[in-house]
Length: 389
Image 1 (cartoon, rainbow, N blue to C red):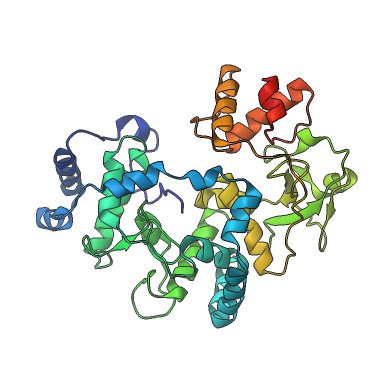
Image 2: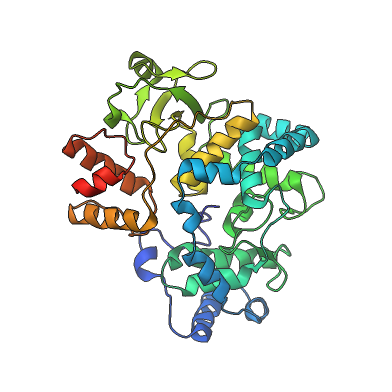
């Protein structure tokens, strides 16, 4: 899910986290440093010793962190892989089974049931596969690793806080490789801040109680800025003579402006909200208007293809038709994408890591170069663009 930096009492200062977060060195020495910091935060030495007594470095966690090739897939390939008829049918059954829970969430937090059903499906297949990584080992391993220690170190202390409350076991709590726990995969700090005992048993049980997990997810989305009663994504039909440089999340227009440009809803009516035209695979592929709630998805997961697929699936679960796939130009191979990113870097664009993933920065750079070269500026990289660069 997302990497939380919330819960001020437990996290590092945002202004100094990147520069001053300890990492690396011997693992045992690193754990000693964590223990000393925990005692300094006010936890008793015996509690801290018990919490860290069996912690181990997990090589499988590091392997999983380095092996996220699934996000290199195109939107159509990724969405077809994640959205099966079985997941649609199961989602609709779950919507009926937990109808009261979803109604309570919608009333209290304003989050539509399709949104939570889609996350539930993608994160754990409706709770069936919640991950078998030891959570503490994963969090400490990723804190020790110097790639993103500022994201994970605060979660270690959040897990310690949950432990003192009787809601976390250093040896038995398991979940995803990045430390998320439960049916909708929440990090320890998110659990502390947004966990809800929705079934009334006195505990927040995100692994075994769908009511608790879904309601906690709804509360967190509201906390992240979700606006009640507003849409998030809507499939549209776009004219072939569009100014494609107007597409992308960096450009926002009113729906009246989009309508004047010839953008039409495939179903229903356009909402009276600002929106961006999203073309996951360029002008020849699927087209969507992304409304303000769409931005909240990026607080849950930073992958453009994951976010767009999750948002689209939520609309499907609430009655939208399957998208029109169109006939987009072939996606670049992984090696071609890396070559493209290197060429974009040489031209002064910030694409982030050269990883073969078509993320936000790479899309923006592609669109800028397409515009410079007189190509349709739809942010979809093609072999033609690669050759021209």
